Length: 98
Image 1 (cartoon, rainbow, N blue to C red):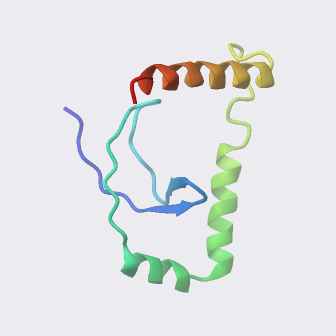
Image 2: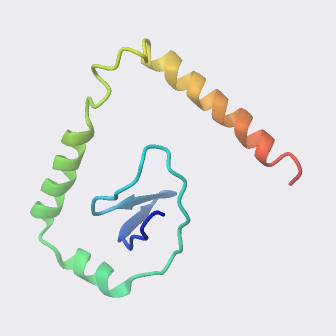
């Protein structure tokens, strides 16, 4: 049985981004309950801008190139397009009766 986690995330341009590490398997489906967090938002807004930027830069550095040594991907553009196409087909199947 999986354990429940309560995390804080920031919503921007249609994407929820966790601001702390999340313990999930790759492609694990989760259920999300949205609860606005005003006190946390105030705390984030008052943080030192340099440290907040440094945190974002560090997260980007950790993610950058994470697929560089993958041999199963081949051409990244072709792989990405194939992945997107498979999801489009899956979404059509899911929502065909909607």
